[in-house]
Length: 312
Image (cartoon, rainbow, N blue to C red; front, side):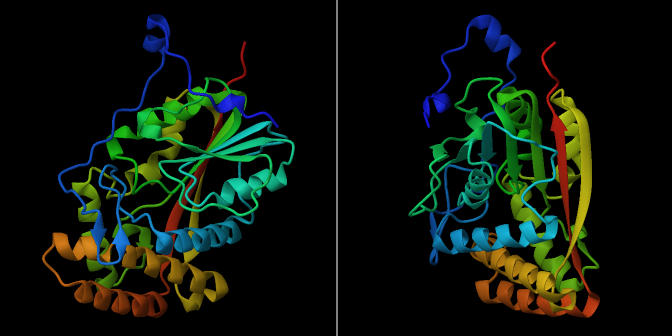
């Protein structure tokens, strides 16, 4: 299958440049993360709060299976037989690889700032492309039939979200679909939230805010608004609740592991920023884990999708 389609776009003419709304350049906020903290590796040049290392690769793959179980599939948008599929912020590439397997006739691209996992035998119709949506996507306009982006609330600055979704819409073909899946680093996303959970998630939210990221769940609440603002039609938003803890059966137990590992991944930056020891943060995490079972806590997510109008 030819892969010429992911070439970088030619320089736009002046009139084209006026029509294309580009996402703003990244802002690293007020707090810089060191490249290495303990055994974890962080990206200094990105607003991304989570590490980029083998531990995070394993967590992201694990998280993928949790979300697929929750959604009973890899997407909710009513796609049929897409010819070209794009996964923005693809992480380990697992979602995109599974879409390539589901649609063997489609060309599937996973895009991220770096390739975190190299599959030994990826499908022939899957390709990884290095790129940063905050700098604009390296694809022609009106190209992909399905564009997917998931859980980048700790990667995309809050102010950049409308422009990012406009950029997703630019590369979407008329009649194609965009799907967004997001959560929030806000204690209000955990319901009910005990005192240790509130304390811990509150600190993570403060660190996110200092990095220019969403700390109050505005992104999750605004997904449909972003899609409408980008000119999409047939927009739908679905709230999702996922149990956290053994009280929620197998899914709840798996989600609790994912949440614990995600919090551990930022425990060192949180401790360093707020003058704590990392062990103090981990002790709060142990207390929070007990609260999830005692209070039967759930975590909130949202999925939204919309369709680019067909060309007239």
